[in-house]
Image (cartoon, rainbow over all chains, first blue to last red; front, side, top):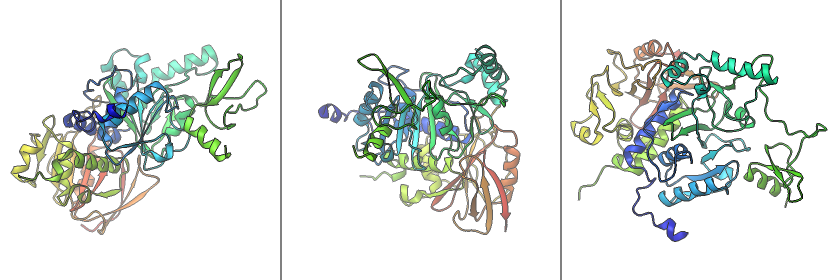
Length: 291
Length: 188
């Protein structure tokens, strides 16, 4: 493995050529200046399939430097396939960077489907991998028209869609990719994070960058910016509930914490088991308990 | 062997970019670019970081040496059509930059304004808006108030607008289009 990671001499730092990085960097600055607006860019071919996090990867490769410490997460875990692959690719092409599993130690965090449980700090930046950047795609097939709707902040049809959900199911049934309004104008698809993570975008201390490689879009939620999930006055937004049938909050089977987002497993004997989705959070709880 | 100036090196540009990303995300915060890029005019360091042949640039007041142009690679454009514009902050505004379109607000100009001082000065401003935790007070010297008046016009219909990067002899600070500026005192 070490030999493979050393075999990086043929690549420039960060794999991308400097022109590609410059374009991504210009796009990032525009995305921060226009919070929530999906800035188009010419997404490069990466040595992995589109849909495997190439948007997030291009963002990370364009911002990272030799002094940075990187954490890569997939569904809350540092050890799942997508995270491991992306991390070793970045290690291979970015000579001198450090990688870590510990949220506190990282200053650049690339993530798929989760935002860490631990509140992020001002000196951290989180890069989210986005499969489908445009929340309006469910109500309007034409991108030209969607761009005008976004510009005018016209989300009436999206709200009708949410209303139809309430009529049919008595609540909004979107479990992840919950449409969220940034700075009172653009509505974004916050990537497939669960509802649980959406409030973390609001007035976040850390900069949030979102990259969609296949769809060729970059957008951002700057720090200390309002991020409000779409909802109605009489049907407020709510996060996932982890209460059992008796109304008791379930806790993690491993660390015992009852405040985190839980994943459901089936144990070898067939009953349901719950564990923290964020593996570093779980580890930290265990350390705190002295285990 | 001729030594390449630091601002043209990829690792320096990466550092400068991180500085720009930091100031753009936190309007009112200024950082020292001269430290990151060697003792050069910060305007040059940030232009070297952002420009290439894909974008257009206008050196409105002729602040750059002709010898920088081939390395910047950017196409020359008139001030009304340039993606990036470099100007003196103490002169009055005599042009209308690109503001973008409703469906493509990214087709708007980024203005780099060279001012006298970003850490001291008797013009006091208060910033609020995205990126600012409540309010932040900013001191600046050598900025013509006309820029702020014109900016109010340019950003009046969000998402259209311009983003400003203010530079002095060592520091850089950003004023994206979303920042609300209140003038607390002014001396020019």
